[in-house]
Length: 130
Image 1: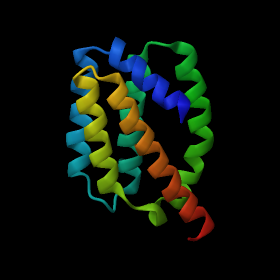
Image 2 (image 1 turned 30 degrees about the horizontal axis):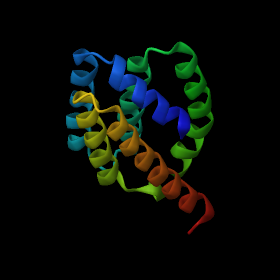
Image 3 (image 1 turned 45 degrees about the vertical axis):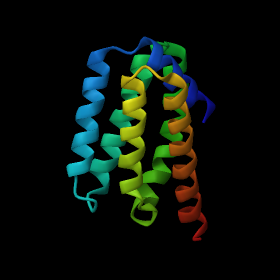
Image 4 (image 1 turned 90 degrees about the vertical axis):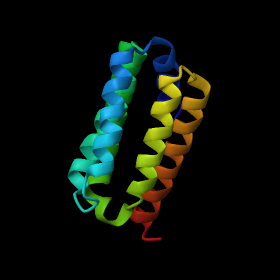
Protein backbone atom coordinates (compact mmCIF):
# COMPACT_ATOMS: atom_id res chain seq x y z
CA UNK A 1 0.00 0.00 0.00
CA UNK A 2 2.70 2.47 0.99
CA UNK A 3 4.85 1.64 -2.02
CA UNK A 4 1.89 2.15 -4.36
CA UNK A 5 1.04 5.54 -2.87
CA UNK A 6 4.71 6.61 -2.96
CA UNK A 7 4.93 5.60 -6.63
CA UNK A 8 1.75 7.58 -7.30
CA UNK A 9 3.11 10.72 -5.63
CA UNK A 10 6.36 10.45 -7.56
CA UNK A 11 4.47 9.83 -10.80
CA UNK A 12 2.54 13.06 -10.31
CA UNK A 13 5.84 14.93 -10.06
CA UNK A 14 7.75 13.11 -12.78
CA UNK A 15 5.15 11.84 -15.23
CA UNK A 16 4.81 13.22 -18.74
CA UNK A 17 1.78 14.05 -20.87
CA UNK A 18 2.53 10.84 -22.80
CA UNK A 19 2.08 8.80 -19.59
CA UNK A 20 -1.27 10.42 -18.91
CA UNK A 21 -2.42 9.96 -22.51
CA UNK A 22 -1.63 6.24 -22.30
CA UNK A 23 -3.42 6.07 -18.97
CA UNK A 24 -6.48 7.85 -20.36
CA UNK A 25 -6.60 5.35 -23.23
CA UNK A 26 -6.62 2.49 -20.69
CA UNK A 27 -9.41 4.13 -18.69
CA UNK A 28 -11.47 4.39 -21.87
CA UNK A 29 -10.55 0.83 -22.92
CA UNK A 30 -11.50 -0.65 -19.54
CA UNK A 31 -14.93 0.97 -19.75
CA UNK A 32 -15.58 -0.92 -22.99
CA UNK A 33 -14.40 -4.36 -21.82
CA UNK A 34 -17.07 -6.97 -21.21
CA UNK A 35 -17.23 -7.43 -17.44
CA UNK A 36 -17.26 -11.20 -17.96
CA UNK A 37 -13.83 -10.99 -19.59
CA UNK A 38 -11.85 -11.04 -16.35
CA UNK A 39 -8.46 -11.70 -17.96
CA UNK A 40 -8.65 -8.56 -20.11
CA UNK A 41 -9.71 -6.57 -17.05
CA UNK A 42 -6.68 -7.81 -15.11
CA UNK A 43 -4.36 -6.94 -18.00
CA UNK A 44 -5.73 -3.40 -18.24
CA UNK A 45 -5.36 -3.00 -14.47
CA UNK A 46 -1.76 -4.21 -14.64
CA UNK A 47 -0.98 -1.81 -17.49
CA UNK A 48 -2.60 1.07 -15.60
CA UNK A 49 -0.40 0.49 -12.55
CA UNK A 50 2.66 -0.14 -14.73
CA UNK A 51 2.32 3.35 -16.20
CA UNK A 52 2.41 4.78 -12.67
CA UNK A 53 5.57 2.82 -11.80
CA UNK A 54 7.19 3.91 -15.06
CA UNK A 55 6.18 7.54 -14.48
CA UNK A 56 7.59 7.45 -10.94
CA UNK A 57 11.00 7.14 -12.59
CA UNK A 58 12.37 5.11 -9.67
CA UNK A 59 13.83 1.80 -10.76
CA UNK A 60 14.19 0.41 -7.24
CA UNK A 61 10.61 1.23 -6.29
CA UNK A 62 9.38 -0.23 -9.59
CA UNK A 63 11.27 -3.49 -9.01
CA UNK A 64 10.09 -3.82 -5.39
CA UNK A 65 6.44 -3.33 -6.33
CA UNK A 66 6.75 -5.76 -9.25
CA UNK A 67 8.05 -8.53 -6.98
CA UNK A 68 5.19 -8.03 -4.52
CA UNK A 69 2.54 -7.86 -7.23
CA UNK A 70 3.78 -11.07 -8.83
CA UNK A 71 3.04 -12.88 -5.57
CA UNK A 72 -0.40 -11.28 -5.31
CA UNK A 73 -1.31 -11.87 -8.95
CA UNK A 74 -1.90 -15.61 -8.50
CA UNK A 75 -4.66 -14.91 -6.02
CA UNK A 76 -6.32 -12.44 -8.37
CA UNK A 77 -6.40 -14.92 -11.24
CA UNK A 78 -7.74 -17.70 -9.06
CA UNK A 79 -10.42 -15.69 -7.25
CA UNK A 80 -11.32 -13.20 -9.97
CA UNK A 81 -14.77 -14.66 -10.74
CA UNK A 82 -15.68 -14.23 -7.05
CA UNK A 83 -14.28 -10.73 -6.61
CA UNK A 84 -16.29 -8.54 -8.99
CA UNK A 85 -16.48 -4.80 -8.43
CA UNK A 86 -15.01 -3.80 -11.76
CA UNK A 87 -17.19 -0.73 -12.10
CA UNK A 88 -15.54 0.52 -8.91
CA UNK A 89 -12.10 -0.22 -10.35
CA UNK A 90 -12.91 1.81 -13.47
CA UNK A 91 -14.13 4.70 -11.32
CA UNK A 92 -11.00 4.50 -9.16
CA UNK A 93 -8.72 4.46 -12.18
CA UNK A 94 -10.48 7.48 -13.65
CA UNK A 95 -10.03 9.44 -10.40
CA UNK A 96 -6.36 8.49 -10.15
CA UNK A 97 -5.72 9.42 -13.78
CA UNK A 98 -7.51 12.77 -13.45
CA UNK A 99 -5.50 13.64 -10.35
CA UNK A 100 -2.21 12.63 -11.94
CA UNK A 101 -3.04 14.51 -15.12
CA UNK A 102 -3.70 17.60 -12.98
CA UNK A 103 -0.38 17.11 -11.15
CA UNK A 104 -2.06 16.59 -7.76
CA UNK A 105 0.09 13.88 -6.21
CA UNK A 106 -1.57 13.97 -2.81
CA UNK A 107 -5.08 13.52 -4.21
CA UNK A 108 -3.86 10.83 -6.63
CA UNK A 109 -2.16 9.00 -3.73
CA UNK A 110 -5.34 9.19 -1.65
CA UNK A 111 -7.38 7.76 -4.53
CA UNK A 112 -4.74 5.03 -4.97
CA UNK A 113 -4.88 4.22 -1.27
CA UNK A 114 -8.66 3.80 -1.39
CA UNK A 115 -8.37 1.75 -4.59
CA UNK A 116 -5.85 -0.63 -3.03
CA UNK A 117 -7.75 -0.95 0.25
CA UNK A 118 -11.02 -1.70 -1.55
CA UNK A 119 -9.29 -4.26 -3.78
CA UNK A 120 -7.68 -5.91 -0.77
CA UNK A 121 -11.04 -6.11 1.00
CA UNK A 122 -12.67 -7.72 -2.05
CA UNK A 123 -9.84 -10.23 -2.41
CA UNK A 124 -9.84 -11.04 1.31
CA UNK A 125 -13.62 -11.64 1.25
CA UNK A 126 -13.27 -13.96 -1.75
CA UNK A 127 -10.42 -15.93 -0.17
CA UNK A 128 -12.24 -16.30 3.14
CA UNK A 129 -15.62 -16.97 1.51
CA UNK A 130 -17.31 -13.99 3.13
